[in-house]
Image 1 (spheres, rainbow, N blue to C red):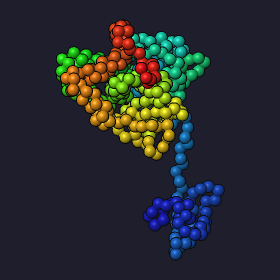
Image 2 (spheres, rainbow, N blue to C red; image 1 turned 135 degrees about the vertical axis):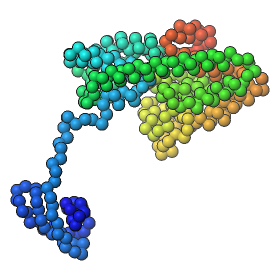
Image 3 (cartoon, rainbow, N blue to C red; image 1 turned 60 degrees about the vertical axis):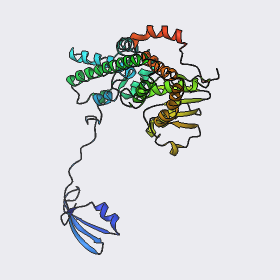
Image 4 (cartoon, rainbow, N blue to C red; image 1 turned 180 degrees about the vertical axis):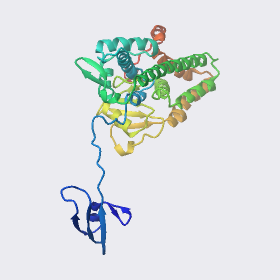
Length: 372
């Protein structure tokens, strides 16, 4: 409604004061031209209410805020998510190109393709949890077949899907190649003379500060390696496990009656998800920075928070001081070897070599922190 050149609603005017509204309809039966007066606000305003344009009804044809391209790009480099998504996406494209309706894939078919991708890019055994997570996010189930949710395909062309498929595969390839480069650098640094302690420290510190990449995998693996060696020196064994079937690089530690939950994500949402994984369990949070919202939640099960500055200024510094006294990189060397072993676990091609090393080094990551 226009009142002396200004757009304002009748409802708004009514809220502004105890207005008395009198309308004289020129065209009864429809909401059209109306004239009248609003008395109040210390004056009488004349107005003319012009017809309102019809609003479009919200229907299924309306394009959603997210499409399949947007959704799957959130999972770039994540093997367990893309190991499920890529087979279904590839089959969908093939069916469209053949002029057929995409039938979706069975879980058995998805599992077979998952293993092929795992052998090529990442080391992960298939688990039904990966498929269950995808349902609702980007897949829909129908008669034991799984296909892309139809609403996520609105406005998306086959060319868009083909470009998306190429991008997803490239992200897995890039993650694998970067991990290989990390392994090569760790091997090179481990081979340095025993007296070169600072060079080893510099590499560990630089890796801890790398929070990007595959969901903060670098920070998670190296922080585990540091804490494991620190506690080992006091006669305890800190071991790796996962509270759930994790999405690539997910890593937690077991310590006595507590869980060490480590992540590069310091958001309040992530903290709440972590607390929900094992309700009622004591835990230590390992984060690169202040855990946003920790004080707000005030959970009695949060025993302590270890930040990046603590890892560098206390835990690694203590190990460095002991190595400097002995003039040998004993502790720092073990940190590097633990990190190397963990990164190798993510590479299928390294699994046979790793198995032999674990036998020699007493490797095993599923024991609680306990007195030796």
